Length: 369
Length: 106
Image 1 (cartoon, helix red, strand yellow):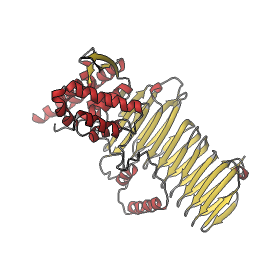
Image 2 (cartoon, rainbow over the protein chains, first blue to last red):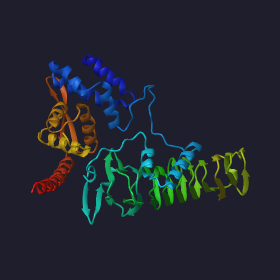
Image 3 (tube, rainbow over the protein chains, first blue to last red):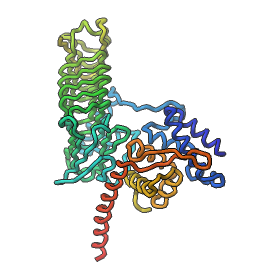
Image 4 (spheres, each protein chain N blue to C red):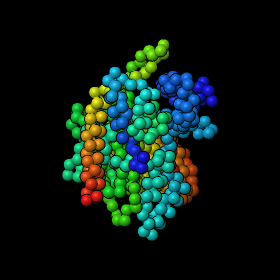
């Protein structure tokens, strides 16, 4: 492969990147081969690896996945807890009853596409502006101006969001736990906090708790928190887009003000949200767990209940909504009326939409002006 | 090397290599120098440099060399602070392990 062919191939493999990012990468590798010198060009290309290898590391570095053979961009996919997932959850529930430790299974299940970070030194402060240890607690601080998004993904343990004074930094405290690898990373404004269970735990463990103190004037574009079994606790939260998900843990929050899309999910856990105001769609999924939203104000609601229970109070009155509802073996209570047994229904022609689906659980929708 | 190298360690080594040239260092040379200390594949350096740049640890400037522009990377103040932190952590880390190893041979 000539240098031209090599760079052309790389350029083609990077087409999903914004042009500025692609040009930056191509320029780097053009210069790289320049610097290697004409006589070493071939060796340099061999050492770099195939254009595919180089492209993959660039795409991974920019937070994207390498294009699939079909060429389709593989965007982040959210799991939906349909009947199949409920069935899977059931199997896991039986496994739990049999005394099999499911923590590891959930850890594997959680993000099939994301490998466990290969960190061996879980305490090295990779991205915090400072890190210190006291009384067995690790404390990290971040410059709030650097953070626009929060991504938390925990295999074990939970997270609590607290409010700090305006103008202060973001503080994170973590209790290091044996057998649990914790990794924090601040990249392009995204503060990522991840932990993974490294070995089978032989006792029931609540798991470490992350306490994250956010200054009250912090404006976040995106908050994504997922836990396997841990709890998520937050007071009032104001954010552009929001995802809160737990497999078996619990979520409790105050009022959530979301400018765009809001997603709440649980497989087998419980979710209790005082109020949710969303400018975009509100997607709720209760799997086998239970979910209650005290007051939900959104132009579009998508609520799905597998075998669990989902209780919503929608803002306004039934006349404000155009509703499609399906009820297989579950029970749907809508505006005081009860529907069951394998029905699909449509009501109203309001400007707001609600898609309600109830497989085998109990979905209750009321209204409050 | 028998020991796994972490992403943080790679960051630290890249910062240290860049810091050695106060006027700045360029991609190819950084790659070669990192490879003297750590066994990494050449293609991992670009994403690391780009990320460190995005994190404000490195700044870049272009300078003509032999009639072509070459991009140089230089440590920012934040990069220097980060490197100092890494060095401190590394010292603590190696001291602890060194002590352990020595005790073992006694």
